[in-house]
Length: 384
Image (cartoon, rainbow, N blue to C red; front, side):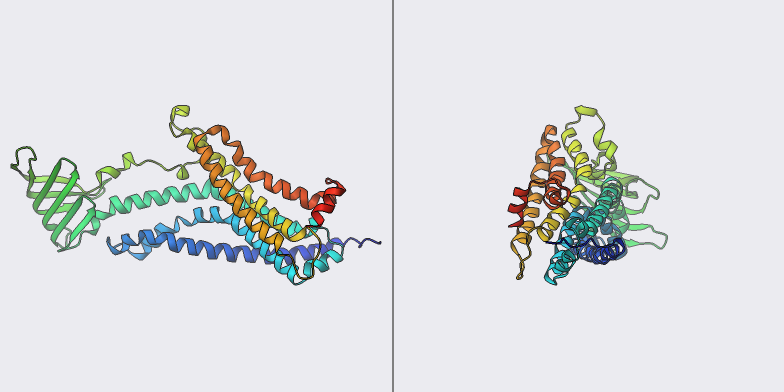
């Protein structure tokens, strides 16, 4: 039997552009839609800042938009698989894949646009994991800290008991045109053994302070001694009151591993004596290995669509198996990540999980063309 003649390179290039255009458009659409949905669900946690603390929607969007890069980094490998699976499944359903094969296009040529897309997704994931996500997440945590612990002082409303924190409530009778506060009452329960009530005739916010502070004039501080039951009253002519949550000061704020740079994760402060060394070490290797899952997931989709014999009524078994395989890989990745965070010796499993599925699928799909697969194995795989 005469084999089909190879397709000339210019025609193959046109087919590459045709497939790649569909893949890129679908990837942007699917990724954008999922990111918008995840952003909407996650941003609901911060609606309380708008409802109870009077923040503007502009500040709300600025805060929550800093989480978008982390969403993209997580879902991009998944959307790459979904797009490759969907586009090639549609082409197979329209018999376009069959026509291309009849014209002499090899599986490697047909897979080339998807491999280019997967390569772009891998590069994008590396940019996100190593640079954009740590910067954006660090800015998010700092911005969130400032809103909850500093800006709260400027949200004091006239004639309203304002809950600055769970243990601190401030009441201001009126605010002057020059910013002076009149008729101040503060209920301070931040100290476990000392519940104080502070009254002051007037006060003003201290500008350029690292934490929200109010300077009170002509007031008193009242506390009840729990041992004797007596009321202790301390009068003052001038007193500075810190409105920040004492348990969330900037000095005690612990940085999350997600906002650390790669060098900080690999070489944490305190070296191997750091009790979180295993967790930081696993996070560093996760950032380096997880982008490669985009290529592996794309290879799983290509094997499902381009391998095996043609069937007139289609074949739903391979696509379904591909979906279940990727779901299993995602669950396995979570389990391996948790184990590696406890035991650094298991970190190589993170790399194996990211690389091995793609290599196995590449061998199954391109092995016959490159002469890397025995003929008996080719016949068994072709019958699937």
